[in-house]
Image (cartoon, rainbow, N blue to C red; front, side):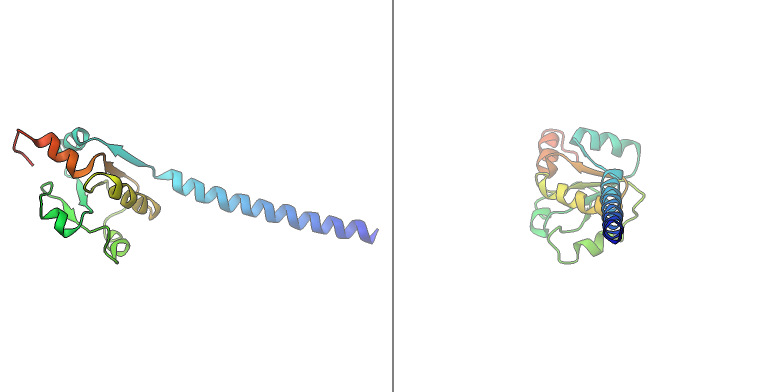
Length: 141
């Protein structure tokens, strides 16, 4: 009888522990899935900018931004030691459009923003290179 009781207690503890771990894992997954990052083209960015003012975040280095940038962009070097602290100064409930040189660094920055609870994050596919390619010949920025 004592042996059955001990086994019952051990099994009960294991079941509750497993349920707690599943619940903890699923809540993290929900948070990650709640605010997905959207990858958009330069053309889509231009369309969004025509209809509303957008927060455009340039995460390139100062040397890169000296070669050109998109007008009205806010500069915040992804490699700065205080990058994560600085991005938290932006409103989390407003759309943030992010670009870098080619789109890779901005994707990583977008992931950081989403993990911090930013709800509407857009990564610009192809980054500033794609912007420059689209602008060749029309002279606008």
